[in-house]
Amino acid sequence: MRRKFVAGNWKMHGSLKSNADLLREVRSGAAGLDIDIAVCVPYPYLAQVADLLEGSNIAWGAQDVSEHAQGAYTGEVSAAMLVDFGCKYVIVGHSERRTYYGDTDAIVAAKAEAALKAGLIPIVCVGETLEERERNVTAEVVTRQLNAVAERCGVKALADMVIAYEPVWAIGTGRTATPEQAQEVHALIRARVARDDASVAAGLCILYGGSMKPGNARELMAQPDIDGGLIGGASLVAADFVAICAAAR
Ligand code: PGA
Image (cartoon, rainbow, N blue to C red):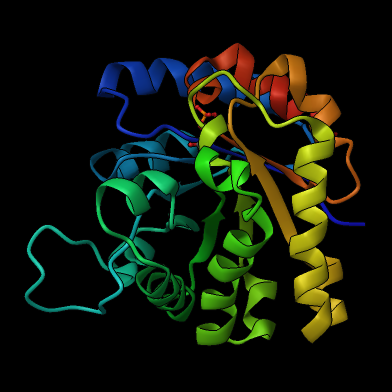
């Protein structure tokens, strides 16, 4: 039985004050829930969040990482730096990074590899755009994105990663994939991995992301291949995030 995992993605939101308020409520609301929980926050707040979550059942992570180990890459943050102060997770290949910052499949794979090598758990995002869904190439796109990572890191390495299926048309739009639509792609991802390694596939944690809310979380996470959620907007509202975590049980 795979454990459920709910991760928040705060995106570029937060302040010292609002983070403290949000995490105080999330920390008490999520206490005792028997699932894995994490929040992925902007770099400047990692240390604050690490402090605020100490001794809780909530882990924390970053939202991106450099594919390079160190060197002349102004503005970048290495995986080793994140590990240095206790980071556990890092999102790589979020569609916003792919769309606005040029993260190609190859760069995403290199970032996942860099994260793994340093001891982080990469949360690798895949997903099709609306145009791709309408052209009926969802399976092809998601498989291509996944293959890039599997080929660079090896299929066995997927056992130490989390995959997040996030249809781009559902992110921040209020438009959620139906449980059936999401399940179909999750099953496809698991089947693709099973072709190479059945045991890695059986243990693989695959999150759904894209307008997951308290009202749709339970039904989505009840699907056989949906192991949790990557939550954007709703992770900024303590009661909503806690309700989604509770719905994962
Ligand atoms: P959303 O974002 O929940 O606001 O749609 C999800 C994500 O981008 O990870």
